[in-house]
Length: 419
Ligand code: GDP
Ligand code: IMO
Ligand code: MG
Image 1: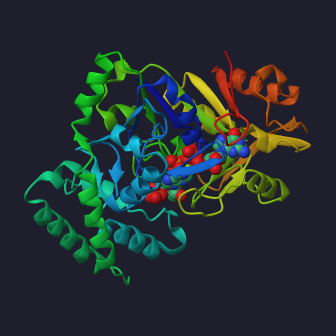
Image 2: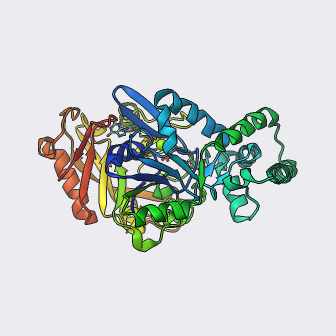
Image 3: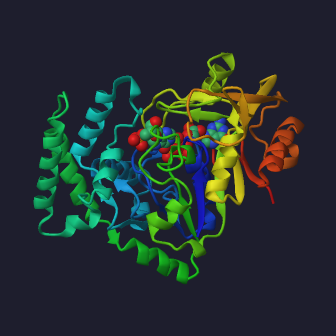
């Protein structure tokens, strides 16, 4: 099994690259996160954003599995299915769901919103999809799982958990109306029953035993990982490569390549520290040229220069074997651009990501010469401008990991794969 995951704060272009790589795989599996993710795919003038469904869904021969580590909202699932059905109805035959994936209830979303409202300016900037409360119920051993929807006592279990949530909501000063959502939610549950609900861990291990090629698709990014991200401004799951073992039930010794994907600069959506964040014209340039708006929430993404200490940290945590650089085209046109090569923390320099990942970190920046060449249409590494090749060589030298794929546009075709 190979793994592809984000090395920054999410939105690195995982959806695009999984779609590009999926013809080489028999099975694509999501292992964590849920509808907080927004994975964009573009091909043949068609754009699509996936939230809970793996990004291999538009490829004819690829099976797609939603793994046990994922949290699923039946409502959003139903909406996604409707949209895919319009474009590629047969795709849905190739979608499998682990019975052990946890369900996001309408009241989980209310708890998410109430908790964020209560935090005021210290809010996480959650996508408000109910992710945190659902994982809390999972680890608190109160959660509802996809397999439960087939049991006779599902309604009873649902009511029990919902009532618990309603009690919890009383501690917040928060107005809500969940009933409208609830009806549609149950419609989503009925739809879910039509899919192949499987013991995902057996399904995926059987596939591996049959020599099928499996790619695990990460959501969010390493700097949003619950253990190693910029806590508490993180998501509630393990976004790092070991999360794929837990989130699918695949042992570590079955893992092959680990693709780590990063943008040629950095973005972050939501609150939390961002050492290389730009508040000047360059930040605006990246935001505008990169169309940096959240694929799930539409929020403007914060933009900044590439952060090498954070990238090296992510490579270490994930065991990255192959780097993928996306959005190289967005840097085109800048006279110069910068990369943080170290952090200055109260006068002390370090290349490690510190425990206190906060606003005291000042980036030590190295300047690079930019290029004017428009990269769209370039399909060979050798044809890239020398300045970009120099930047890539610098990253390879610093990280000791080859940059094997370079993405120069949002379309499937705008991808350079180095042999
Ligand atoms: P994901 O969450 O990692 O799948 O990434 P998103 O889909 O949230 O955000 C990436 C955005 O950049 C999407 O709008 C993609 O269509 C777009 N994109 C991906 N790769 C490239 C690229 O190389 N160049 C440009 N200009 N856009 C890209
Ligand atoms: P993809 O898979 C970017 C961010 C939110 C917030 C924090 C916690 O598209 O890369 P949550 O809803 O998980 O409780 O929010 O994490 N976040 C993402 N940022 N891309 C994502 O997913 C994200 N999923 C969550 O903005 O700061
Ligand atoms: Mg995204």
